[in-house]
Amino acid sequence: MVEIIGRRYDTQQVVALRCVDGRVAEIDHDREDLVDLAQDVPWVGPGLVDLQVNGFGGQEFTDPDLTIEHVKEVSLRMDADGVTQYLPTLTTNSIATLTHALSTISTACGRSLEVSVRVPGIHLEGPYLSPQEGPRGAHPQRHCRAPDWDEFAKLQEAAEGRIRILTLSPEYEGAAEFIEQAVKSGVVVAIGHTSADSSQIRAAVDAGASMSTHLGNGAHGQIRRHPNYIWDQLAEDRLVASLIVDGHHLPAAVVKSFVRGKTTDRCVLVSDMVGMAGMPPGHYQNSAVGDIEILDDGRIVVAGQRQYLAGASLPLTVGIANIMRFAEMDLATAVDLASQRPAQLIGAASGAFEVGAPADFIQFSVPSSVEDRIQVWATIKAAKVVYGTLWEPAI
Image 1 (cartoon, rainbow, N blue to C red):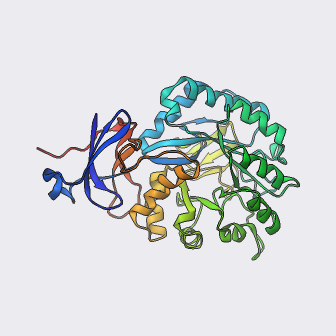
Image 2: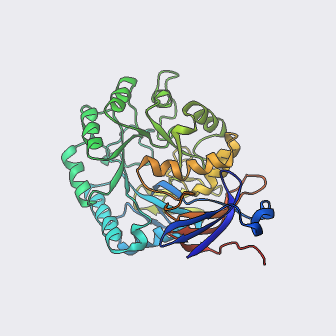
Image 3: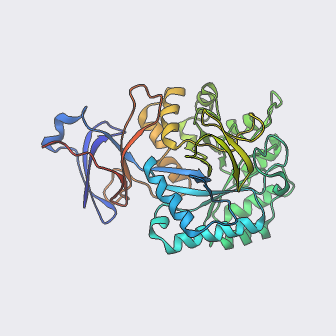
């Protein structure tokens, strides 16, 4: 049994949660010894859910040499940032590399409880993306191609059915039919890294596409004023937009405009952290995209230029603080965009203040300036403290 005490992120009430066997067993808002502590205790909220994690600490998931131990190491390192569930994300590469990586992640889920409880599925970002410069971003052009159902079925077989999100571009002939088949199979189809026109995006959504992957990124440096694929996705109420709000991928004004346009009901936060996240500035050889450079300000770019980003280096806790500041958003909504809403998008259960809910929570504080990142005091996964130390009132 573990007891978690904190100020609820949504109601600001001080609460004591008693958790047993991985679940919330009791919720107490009326303990006399906690009534006067409201301003002195840390916040408590649901564990974070990151739908796009490419790797961490020097290890990419898109790696021909990926091992079960690598998957476990990255999974456990998510604990420090309050991430209790995440989707290992594979990017465009050879079928041999993707098949190996998918199989390795799936095997890790089957053999390691520590991995399986943290990994509700896999995000496959490509290889069915635009080959054009700009939209494809850092994805290798030689592997970008049209959707192929037989090929995807083999990739899903290697993953043992664990591909939960597929990001693709609907600019190809036959894309709508592919999307319809993928959605019927239980996969969330997201539009991303695309140069699709308005009719192609509309056809993709009609076929069942329900998400935009990191809206505003993976795009041409210059696009037509209107119409264009950003406006089309922004206006489409059937699409939920994932946003990278690390301060590098989208300017503050764009974040605010996107949130206002989509509404908070149709936005989720992702980190898009890549394998070099957590590494010091310098040049690196990346197994997924080749030569990259980590700049002094934390940006990760394709080496030799400064325009095209190669993923992100900062965790969801930074995104929460930034979106509060950029979009004038309250704490409860910002945390929901990084926890309950992404979980709902993929049909995963998340931490909640309900008896019987998974006991996945974080104790945290918010910097007074909200200019850094949320400070995680403790991460609780399935009623076990997996990072930090739980705050307890002084007796």
